[in-house]
Length: 106
Image (cartoon, rainbow, N blue to C red; front, side, top):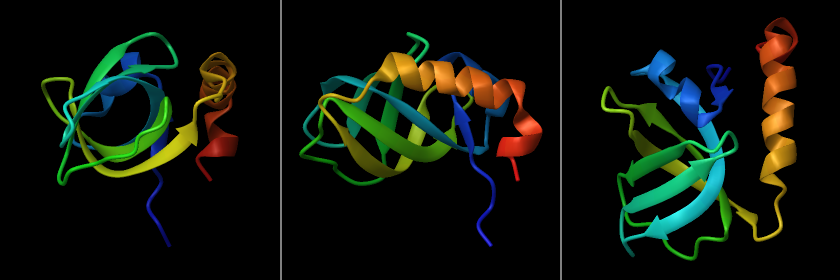
């Protein structure tokens, strides 16, 4: 069975250092290789440094990776969520999941 991975807002990352998490956000910039700067659903800016080059990013992406002590993430996997993903509604869903952790943490 897979280990639980918390879905977080960017402002929650510092509470999960060295943990595996999932972050969804809008791509602000991409260096064309391994570094992606993104804005999370709560408006926080997060730098993700992938182990390998990523390409063909859409406007919104989901990243699974490890939170680093400096507030960045080491990205392991990335999924495109398209150019029309409603990040505001996703942020609202995160608040509901946080309020009802017992249901969503299995």
